[in-house]
Length: 235
Image (cartoon, rainbow, N blue to C red; front, side, top):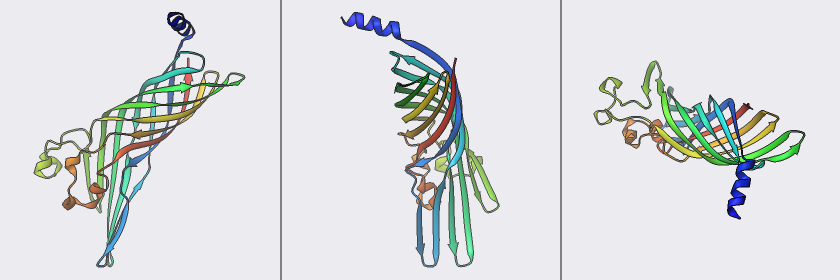
């Protein structure tokens, strides 16, 4: 009986290929925003969202007309923007940090399609994504001073970092996380909303030192977080 069921599922299976692209709005979860005042000195650390994009190929394998698996291969730009402000009497000190990693991502999700009639479907999906960092920068600006460091390359003496950080990287290259989505499909066209939540720590823990400033320490437990809107087409 199980053999006949397997053959029936295989006979009804359908493999679909398509393309998908869209907008990312990313930031870091685990980021610690704060405000403090002491002896006439105050400091604030705030995080802002960073716009980005994703594009790639989409693959669906439908076991039945309703139940399937969705995967693909995507290029995705993520990151965040951080602003730190210190005030003492009439003096103001401001530091801006932008982190801009790009990844090659492979999502793997289970989906279930609800038939709304007239070739219109809606389907929720949930699963995991796996990411490999391709490149990106951490750019820091304090007053007129600017510094730009590669996220996934080893730091060197020319990067003007402490001796113990030479040979270290700023960000961990590999990322894994959860993803959920809701997609509306009409004929071969799709429009979808999605959310990605990283499970692995993004930044190298060896970079954090209380004496090096409060902005890096605010990002110590950071993980990727991304809201996205996508449009796609299945061939």
